[in-house]
Image (tube, rainbow, N blue to C red; front, side):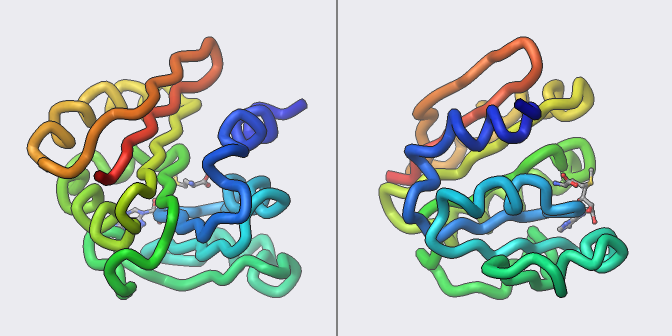
Length: 158
Ligand SMILES: C[S@@+](CC[C@H](N)C(=O)[O-])C[C@H]1O[C@@H](n2cnc3c(N)ncnc32)[C@H](O)[C@@H]1O
């Protein structure tokens, strides 16, 4: 089983029948693998160039793709059950506070923000997230999964 399949299976209870937002989706590997669990998926990135290069927008049904800056999501408040950032933390490091604020804004109360890192670069940034979320009164760490090949931080929006 590929790591991403193991990860989505591990997260299935958070994904099942839920409205999922992925930020900084790139190749959209997470969204594609979450499809078998989720009710609805919106995959966003500041540039959908990678998804277009792989022709994903045409061939993957049931995922909506939209170009969007993760620091300024053009989405309603409380419109997703779960917001996910997979393997993109290294690219978002300098803007992480705004990204977390936006992910939190669009996530419904009692929903989850999920950060996943399989690369060393992203795993390092993941360690700093606990500091950032301590400044958000309505976010608490729900699970911190530290595996040999991946790290996952699951944050609950109270
Ligand atoms: C490592 S790459 C791709 C990660 C992706 N999750 C994957 O598995 O392919 C990081 C992505 O972050 C995106 N990105 C960088 N800054 C962004 C921003 N401000 N808002 C949204 N996406 C951003 C890049 O366009 C790139 O696709």
